Amino acid sequence: MFFAAFCALLLVVFAAPAASAAAREDLCEALRSRLVRGGGQASGLLVVEADSGATICSRAARRRRTLASNTKLFTTATALARLDPRSRIPTRVMSTGELDEDGVLHGNLYLVGGGDPALGMPSFYKRYQAGIGTPLPALATRIKAAGIRAVTGRLYADDTIFDRLRGVADSGYATSPYIGPLSGLAFDAGYRSPRLGGFATDPAKLAASTLNRILRKRKIRLKPRIALAKAPRGAARVTVIRSPSLTRLVDLTNVYSDNFFAEMLIKLLGARFGGGGTTANGAAVVAAFAAGHGSGIRAVDGSGLTRSNRASPAEVVGLLRSVRNTFAGEELIQDMALAGKEGTVASRMRGTAAYGRCRVKTGTLTGVSALSGYCFNRDGKTMIFSILMNGVRNLSLAHREQDRIAGAVASY
Image (tube, rainbow, N blue to C red; front, side, top):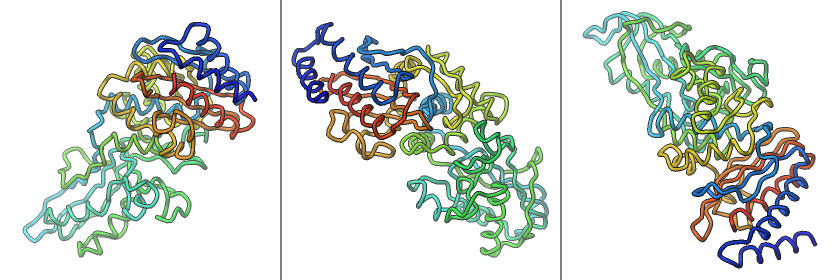
């Protein structure tokens, strides 16, 4: 009965080129009702028209709430803007000593991590990362192409671009049960085997030992045992491999809500712009970026795993509206999941006007459900919305009400 009345109201509201103030308020009351029905009284909503900034509907839109994975919108928007969507993250092989005419390196090799979250084996990332990855074996090919046939010293792993805290605040900075251990030299998203057989104790050592094994299989002689050490100043570059473009990494982060990639990106922001590769330094960079765009966030990590990541619907919408017409913002929009077709919303919003017309980011924790993004309406209007539910008791109901709100937004 309620749904039929709601649909009738939409017909009235959208029959005229511009809805009257009274009709708009009636529509907004229907949206607020759906919001509370799905997420309880501790929920907030804001819907604006992107070009004018006119508010179409709001409810407690300036009160900060737990963001869950809507935190990734702030992390990835900052990464795209500060690092450039076309940039690629390097992993280098460095050497000390001299290479003689017989191809013997009288010194050591160093595998130097650059904070690439996608480094791994093709057998892993083709199965678990939608084919997005940086192939570690390619380094072995390039080392051999550089003329190295034997190494008198060792292969060392250098992960010093980041600190060695493996998790975020949610897990007491130890390895989280939800994501692999973080490392400046990550490998296979922190798993100890390509078949997801638990997490590695030390990803950097696993990366170096895997490269060592591949090199020896390719008849390059070197000691089988690896160790951790920072590449010394003055070490020579042997070769480098680079990640897929940042926009492809962000696409995986947002479309599939990949927590590991988000946490690696925030540490990379700290390393490049915050004085050191820590989660806290990266969070400060993200918060400063948001403030510079008339928005704001209490950022604690990059993914939203920690419940104290908080912002208001107004701050989420403010960020999305501010970056929308920038090069980074255009990439961000394309790197969000298309309603009904991709990632975390592949099966949602079907049968509504949002289907195939809204680019969104979801968020889920116990008692928390979020949906924010852009809708591109048939009449050419772009709408921006944020739904932050913090009193969820029934996740299926929350999703259903969010989807209907998004459908109404896409029809406005």
